[in-house]
Image (cartoon, rainbow, N blue to C red; front, side, top):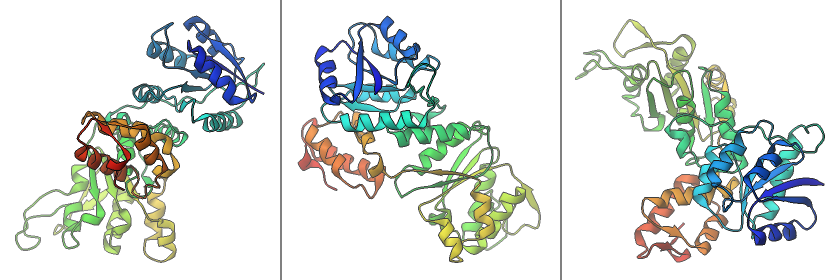
Length: 379
């Protein structure tokens, strides 16, 4: 049987947890900061459950200290109520998992078992030291919100790429956050001090696409003036090429040359220029299938698919919806009612985070009060 310690002063919450797990866990209680620190470092527990509502200490200070203890067990935020701002604070510490006792017990037990199953036991216990979810640099990491296992996986993956300059292929559905994750990769890479230039390949006019990507010399065509392209603008940094599957065969061939030898040629020029650009490409299509169908160059595909990140759809990480919603509504000074939040959680979200944000923006615009109710939500 797994053993957990619950850091809480809430006697009712502790009793509710014990009743809810129904003998599936051995639950101990730590009511002071000293007891919590001892429990986190003793190697006797499989997990540490942390209640944000503490009277014994400053909860943020204590959680920060607990998260820094070497070989600690995984930490899960568990409370009788949902404290979204604290969930975001915990996520920035690399602690993924926020659970409300009234409705999230089954998910809590499943996530605990998943953590325990994939980590080696420590001596003298069935406890599982959590793999640290490292903090990431840059503004993008602060806007990548989520406490779900999938969100933690993305953060770990970005951290693993931090020393690489190789091309990255980011795959995921429209609206899932591919550009934000790509910016996270850039801001935690060796070229973080260089520019990050986002380009949507599907929006490039066919007649001007080559000129916009690689630049033009004066007189190359009627009215042409000399100017640099996106690759030169990204020199020393990162070019994020979204919807790379939409590139024409001609542009695919030219992109291959840049990837292989770092050389570009402006339209109308006979001389090549060298650029140092970290390339991150993204697509919501299956590039491997496009290769099989002859719609995408095989050699380019393998050049781009050196490092891969797959962004999960929002429907696979619905536990992140409360945090995303709170973030989006904060500037508008609006809040979700619990029935409205339940409705958001029950929806499929084919448009992912982008659709969620648009839905919340519409709801905030039409509600006359500070509270958003289910009737204000229009999917």
